[in-house]
Image 1 (cartoon, rainbow, N blue to C red):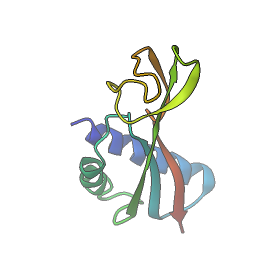
Image 2 (tube, rainbow, N blue to C red; image 1 turned 60 degrees about the vertical axis):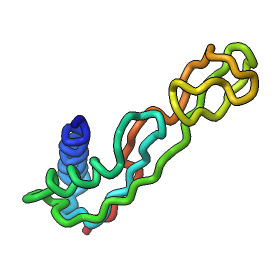
Image 3 (cartoon, helix red, strand yellow; image 1 turned 180 degrees about the vertical axis):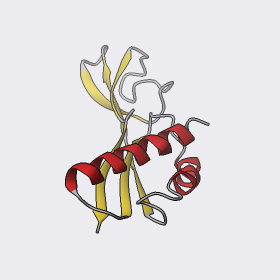
Length: 113
């Protein structure tokens, strides 16, 4: 379950930001998770709660937004939406696709005190 290591990475980000910006408590975290990122939001929610225990973000609310996948279709020569990495181009049905978005995860916003 790589969601545990992702949650631990989020904890390190929060701790680093707290040091650099001078806050003491995180009450909410907003994450953007790409549809093509292979991260399971439900598993990440569980791991987030466990990973934040004893930290400045213990009890913080986690808000997850799924961002859509996007790919460049070399056959159509344009960017197209992509729901799964194995899907064909929705326009031409081809498989010459290069993922250009929606395969990442980022901390978008924090609520702190």
